[in-house]
Length: 232
Image (cartoon, rainbow, N blue to C red):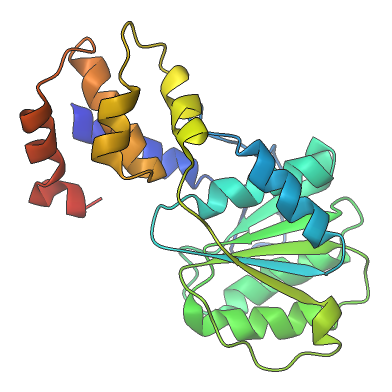
């Protein structure tokens, strides 16, 4: 059903390239992105320009606001596809697990940009300290749920840029809608119900697609206010 499709999308959107583990054998793949996204071209271009002057970009924001996707889009923009990698920290039981995988990545010459994704609040400062003293020329993108008052770092002005993921613009919402190839104009109802939030835009589009793009506005609003949505 629609909720299963949404869950599958959420799981795919956070698919890792490097998984945090205790094995010395880390398999590297592509940076994978979901099909139904906005590439946020203007935002990515702006952040990449600012990223040229710092070593670490820290992206934060609410759950499912598009942090991981934005980080991967930036990594793909500034480096060739096979010169970036992702470390997914969402299931890391301790910082030591993250540190083990990160140190292997730091020692590798193959990746010039590293995305350290889904870092828990309590681990961010440890990751920052480790990266700030790394001697290699790599650049790093960290994603975490909220803004943090990071402790002072060596040469902090040239090390860190913090950025909160903004809501989608109207054109970015339309970009996502168009990936579904709807057979009528649904931009108004999607913008009205989804509050320019990526996962809600996905949710509304999936629902409308399952209804063959026919909808009742009051029913759709009722669906989006249901308790079952909060569980995602």
